[in-house]
Amino acid sequence: MPITVIGAGLAGSEAALWLAGQGVEVTLWEQKPLRFSPAHKSAGFAELICSNSLKAERPDSASGLLKLEMRAMGSRLLDCAETARVAAGGALAVDRDKFSAAVTALVEAQPNITVRRGEVTAIDESQPILIASGPLTEGPLAEAIAALTGNHRLSFYDAVAPIVTAESLDMDKIFAASRYGRGEADYLNCPFNKEEYEAFYQALVGAERAPLHDFDGDLTVYEGCMPIEVMAGRGADTMRYGPLRPVGLRDPRTGHRPWANVQLRAENTDRTLYNLVGFQTNLKWGEQKRVFSMIPGLEQAEFVRYGVMHRNTFLESPAVLTPALCLKEHPNVFFAGQITGFEGYMESAACGLLAARSIYARLRGRTLPPPPAASMCGALVQYITTPNKDFQPMGANMGILPRTDEINAIRDKRERYMALSRTAQAAMAGWVAAQEE
Image 1 (cartoon, rainbow, N blue to C red):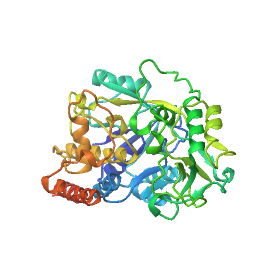
Image 2: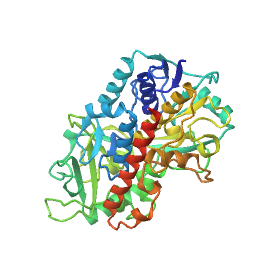
Image 3: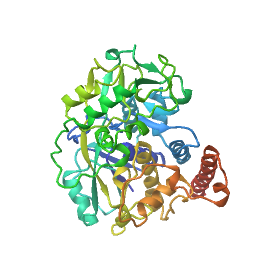
Image 4: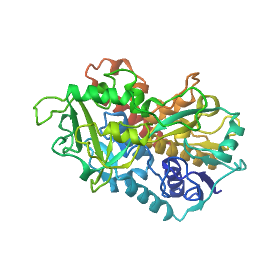
């Protein structure tokens, strides 16, 4: 039986590749380039919007554990990420254009996948269908989803950080280093002294923001991608304990830790472009140029992309989704990716793998139980399907993994996280092995 997948983002691409690898015929629909969302610019698949970082790889980190679980499930996008890797200390960051090109080529080369370029306006429930259209879903498809879910949808605002050219940076003021010496000085650092930071802070909180044309109510901002000006509005030191934290760094000019520090991460493999880490913003473009040029070393920075803000739409998953990632009232309709509340690039791809496995089990006349709650994927599924009146998207984090008395007894945080990781990996390996029996 052929399967339709709507959306060739990270979740849709990962799901289509996995299903095709099992011999399933897949029709993959992608509306680009016939129609672009407000945030998308490229016609390629798995386009990265907010950042080019896929986060940490250490097994004792939530992001690293998630990647290990994805590999156990047969991720193909992680292979594409390796081919597009750029240096980022202990994180996996990619050249976003090369990553998208690698995913696109892999999908288009798969004989069991038929790519259709066009907009899907209706949902056919006659056979299993996977909707991985992302949090920017709009138009007739959004209306069709609302008709199935009874308008159980939530909206948040998400923001994107600016990108500058390397040649426009003042390297006399900037130094290369990774926090605590991790990696080979993969980040560029722009150190503030106290006076410089306070002037920057005052300019930032007073800067003019761009209007949100589709805004019609109280502004809800996703905490994990908060605009820098919103963060600054919470207090003068909030940024210094967030993306501008100076810990683990020393300014070679002074020999001391900076008062605050802005990190720049390579945007492409040639390191000709850098993005401002943590600087998602909705300031007007002229204000971004004025205020962000106050960052030491960015006085003459050339901005090739300014930050923007856009609406993201998510299902109220606890009300409408089962742990198999299908609708409670329409069991042939599966969802995957950020539209479910799995927040983050790798989380979205992992959700695609989970939904693909659920659909495959359905095709074989079986019901696939969700991954164990002790695994990161299982904990995320449990989170998005457990009743929660204040539901918000959630990314991988160690806080959602269940604790045992034995693990709680481990005092060292790193050792405790490593113990959680080992338990999660074992749980995921057992779950995957059970499906192959």
